[in-house]
Amino acid sequence: MAKAAASEELRNGFTEHLGQTRGHVERLEQIFEALGEHAGGKKCVGMEGLIAEGSKVMEDDFEGDLMDAALISPAQRVEHYEIAAYGTLCAFADLLGESQHASLLSETLEEEKQTDEKLSELSDEINVAANQTGGRAH
Image 1 (cartoon, rainbow, N blue to C red):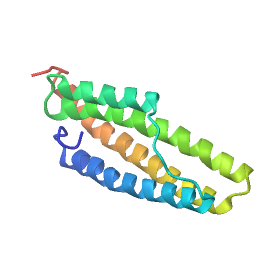
Image 2 (image 1 turned 45 degrees about the horizontal axis):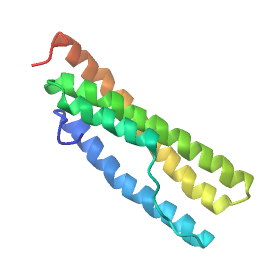
Image 3 (image 1 turned 180 degrees about the horizontal axis):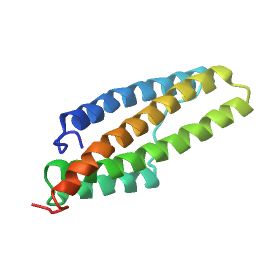
Image 4 (image 1 turned 120 degrees about the horizontal axis):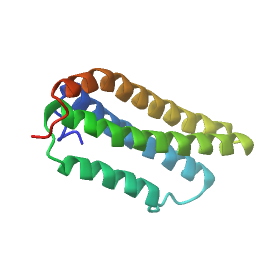
């Protein structure tokens, strides 16, 4: 998505969030290690669908602000999915009395919320600019 973004600010936002995601993985690995468990990945059908939607958008014949507006939508869907997942994990960790794990998960949850907020702010200006192009693909 970063490569497809026309706006430097949007492109930087995608790139920064990728770096944050690496930190999210490190936190999860810390939690698994503390629990004496192996951190293994499982395919998430829901997330795969969201990623496929984002990939489909990049195949559309949009340019500039119109492409950026189109990219923000699937990016925010991913963020909302992650916010829901981390919110649930935080609640479970709290319920189980795992305050250290809850703290790590809460840190990630807050970063996901901040990313979603930043995307909303960017969409305010990008959507206006995209609308001025008449919503046409090129």
